[in-house]
Image (cartoon, rainbow, N blue to C red):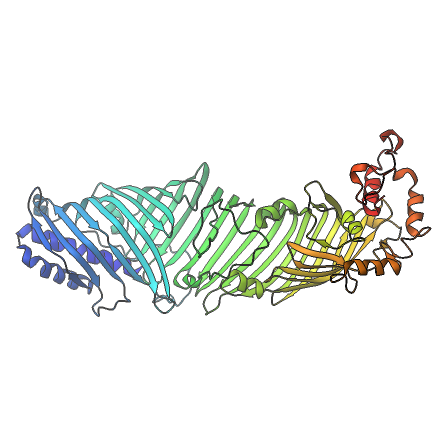
Length: 640
């Protein structure tokens, strides 16, 4: 960007001034004025030297400047500036005869570069142009070489006063060299709390400043982001304002990588890239209390905890334009898995658009389109998600840590929202969602047992147990979502021996739900395809409260304030487990029991929940083979 170009020119002018000082032996008292004039004539920036200026000739000619700063001519605190605690330059006097100073060492202590970010580029008018075919005007060849360059405890601060934006790269440590035959760079820094390291080596590096491509060997590490080290080779070419990286070929861990990238830093940075990799593992950093990132593996808030109200700053999207293509045979982001994946993302005028096509998710296929518009005061978000044939248990467990369902998952989601925090976004979601799971199970929950228990008492929570489950043939619901409230009138669960229809709503922002359900028993092994009529519960069942720990009870007036009285009234009216008359002697229940005959068999002691004296258990050989699951189901349901 322009800030880095100005800083580089100012630094070069400072080195040139120091070289002249050492060559002609100018007394130290005159060094400051000479350096200031050189910087002003070459860059238009003003150099301030508030510390001591020292000149030494042993063991080699060395000039040291203390407390320097480079600012624009107006001295604005908001403009781009460069400051350092001290700069020390040493060189060989003999090299001056050749006309190209050979600087033996440059040491910079605590440099701080402040970059004033701009929302709009100087000439691109906010567009994202196609991949450039040349590097533009070559950068001028440096008038000097440096045998050793060191930077100690540097920092870069990118900011915009209007948007109250400030991004940091801290604890920068750099060692390198720039000679006619060899160029080396080793940079260590922290972006936020995450360490990064870049190493690069090149032969004949000065050719790159003349617009020629230079082969470079590179290595990049970001242990808080990438699971493996990126290594490779590329042809690098530097223009006056464009850096091109072509023919990148290498590895991330054991996976092959290839691609290209370019950065135009003439004003607002423009990044363009196209990468293809066999496998990429990306770590996910979860926000910790206070907004800081926690290390991978740190325990996250439980599912019932409120959404975070911590603001997530997205205004930085306004200060970068990008056009990136990415493909991978396998992509792992935290616990999320996709194979294969093709991603195209653009950033322009503060709007991020991303689309994933031909993406495999957990045995299914997905098409995803998402956008984030951070150009205004409040970010706006959209998501379109179309998934078919995925394994529900694996997907929901990895993405949402939700392991209650297994089966083949289909989903169509089209939603929009606004807000800068989790709570604001979830409370403003609007759109639609159509979800269906087929040929699977509800894990940890025995629906028939819950229904039977409801004939005697209300329930708190989902009555989860690792040993329980309920087979399902189909579970589906269509939701209309408005202002964070997802409502449905056609919730349906079909299982081999149970059916549940229902309607209700989920409050996404408050993490609560309220549903009215109509559970039924299917008296046939043919399940939802059978001809036998199901027998209903008699009264609807209400499920309400926190979606992680709801209350479940028959919808009878006063049941929460006076459960015993309500249940007595329910049975007195004959509205028992299967409706009016169904729970009485000679009713439909006894008819059903008699019709099943020996399928039921006596109930075992360890499964009796009504504190009755159970009959002697039948021997396994006395029961018809293949029907034990039906008997178990009905025993749980009827308490027999």
